[in-house]
Length: 472
Ligand code: HEC
Image 1 (cartoon, rainbow, N blue to C red):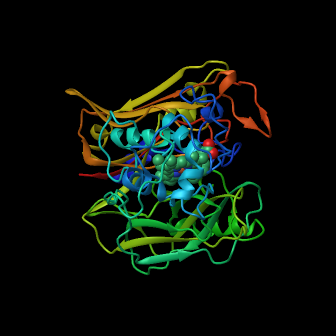
Image 2: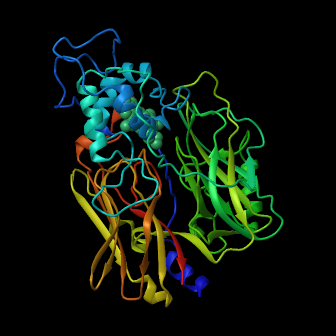
């Protein structure tokens, strides 16, 4: 059954994923396009957020009631520190008082705008595991702390740390390292695929995933794909055709793309972004893997920071010979958008274009589909997106992204998995702004609006859901 439905449904649904965290035309730049604008909430007399002078204090303010050690530190540590260590990408240190103080104005601005921490899911949809979003009261407290001048307080009497919300990979059974060092060739962004042989000699299941970045200053994000044994030769040929280790790839690994997500095709294994400690897949589930297959590790390098630019990263897996239920990452989009790209037309100049797609996949399969996590993928013109289950009794929201940002695409693990039963429809809706003001900068110039359709180039668009699912 699985084979038939996959072939039917996913047939041609997905190509050219380019999920990641780097805007290739504005690499490592502002987390979103609005961050250049001055924040209306900010005091116009304030100095340029980029030029902070630790000795400067605001003469209008009395003694602060909210201090770093008594209030802000545990929140900043838990919600920012994971990505803002000394050598992390972005180069902005938020794990010492000095670091927080000297970055206080910019930090306040990003928190106010909601661009940091980069958690895209809106909070009115559903609950997720491992959220690193600021809770409303934490946000208030941090804003107060910054408004009052980011005072140090008493280091001898610090507030207790928050309970960690981060996930991690519980066991490393298989670690696959890039065979040699790689030095990015394309500046400042290099998207490179490194095929690595899968080492286990028995079939089994990948039950968890993590990345150990070799050079955290330049590794912006990593996606791992699975290429089954039938495709190993094609993968090798692709690598051999290009000089140096690996080969250039933006989006999917570019191997037999017409079969992406289908039996015998390349499949998604997991993604990682700075701050990630990995994840165990839902209890009792795993992604099937065969001996003789390859893992294709796609690394997005951003070389704005860092003294040395060589990297040898590794991917880590938890592996089990059996699981209760075989899982897959189900790609979700309207097949028409691919076969007839005009059906997802985003006309030039239109500031609010919406496309949506819903379908009763459970009836077609004659099986329930259990959804554990949701992920959204659009390109640079996307503004918002939503995924939900339409039942006769109402809607169950899976993911709502009120302000899309291409730089931050995480998998959102539902606190409680949702079950799609026959009669239910799985929906995705995306919105784009194709007006002149929202065009990407390409080679230093803001491009003119043009009619945009589905495609895997940076100036094409997508509206794609990626759901971790099992069938029952
Ligand atoms: C998941 C990782 C992650 C978390 C969590 C995170 N940041 Fe960031 N932040 C980044 C990265 C990476 C950048 C570099 C810019 C980019 O690539 O988008 C960045 C950039 C910034 C910048 C510079 C923005 C600019 O316009 O130059 C500030 C300020 C910032 N972060 C503050 C914070 C604060 C404050 C928190 C917590 C409330 C936080 N960040 C949480 C990853 C993170």
